[in-house]
Image (tube, rainbow, N blue to C red; front, side, top):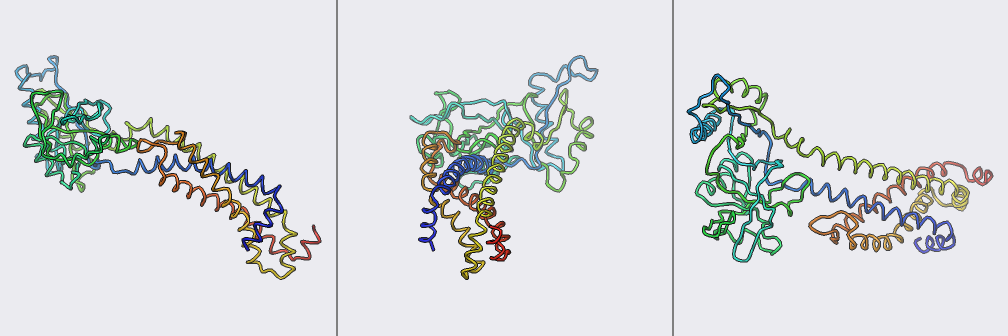
Length: 412
């Protein structure tokens, strides 16, 4: 049957050449669209390295001397003591599972400090995020170690003075941090003191649309307290209902210490949504445009094959008049379009490869050309176009086969 189809395609080379060119262009455009959607989806679904479910950020405020309740003796070091007392009061609340204090370290935070982590000749990227946190930070956001360490174990390592670093910190040297656990490093630009690496962390992403491989971070124990730091809490899952209102109701009586009070409470779901709003809108608009393009491709191919099949009603009738079954005629019509698609797939792959080689498609894992990704996206594109061909040829073919051969030939 394949030989007969190839002969027929050859005999009808004029119309089939234009169809092949159309399918070639559609295949390349489809691959480009699928490649972008694939990269965006896979990146979004990567493990984040933390968990913000049931988590809240508490901002602290300080009374000024204009307030009648201002206490002038609770300043300086006393203010730091009040902050720690507030932290302890939060920890004693039954609905709170864990409380942490940190400096510019919480997830979805646009204000961060950076540092360099140096070991011998190995240096981390200059944009390595520095997270200064209390040990409970690991419990609040449920960090995990690359070697399977739990958040409890990571908290204990911070408590004893070790630092933690994401496993990909020396990725450019192809050296995982798990191989350097227990070694001593230089941190914070200080060459006089070394710090022990307690554990390698699972890669902690900066936000949902940044790839894990490009997110570098380290964590060290916070050694002072002040009201400019952030308090983060994890609420027990079964007591998360209306937590913000309940906390605000108690904040005036129970959660004011000296001049320090809780000024605002926000859920991390809201923080996450707000921080990523611009990027989410950009991606949504991009995907909407691509969806519109795909719809036009679908309608164009559908119309092409619908019209092509409608024109061949007399051919269908002739096949039936010679004893061909409906199934055989139907298979032949579908197989012809699919065979042309198979023939153009090879040159389409060559074009796809050159587009990726010249870095004209989406970036992922520091490259635009990955053979696995190229083939996966090409396969998805092939399947989508094949479905369009099947629908565009199948529906009018079934209608045409319901007509009696004599009637179809008479109309012709």
